[in-house]
Length: 182
Image (cartoon, rainbow, N blue to C red; front, side, top):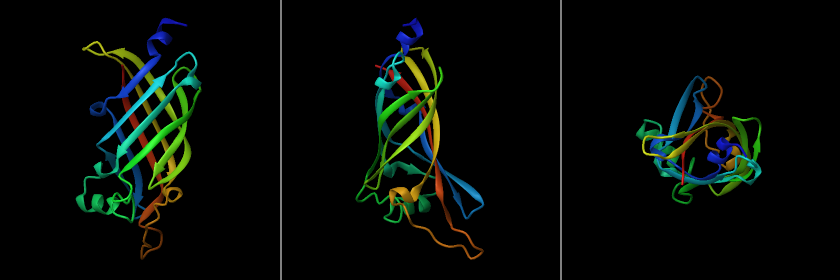
């Protein structure tokens, strides 16, 4: 095992103040609306020597959604979309990790939204490790995946007068995560 591999292997926690979990969806077929979830927590174990032993879990407080528009955020929180009254969290729990090359990994896991669980694979680029000024070992993980929101029962939409739909079915989920080794 190389020194860098030994340095990478270990338990990690997400640093929420240096991480972003967000999404992008088309609105009115012409523009992209971006949003983030401001409250989340996650932990994991990364085995650099044998990545298949790695695992992670993430819990997002769905009411922390922020699209920079209070009315839109309220609508997304309603039963038309995320139905926060019945489903206050969104979770992702890994079921497998595959090394593609030294910096890229495919993380497969179960994403649960609105009580519906579906498997998906997110390609991640891993950077680091680096030691921050306080002596903490950190890695970065950056990845995105396109999903169809209807697969999780997020079905609301309305037809535009000119044709097409108000909100795209395809949504890009984005993960930019700083993880600190425990």
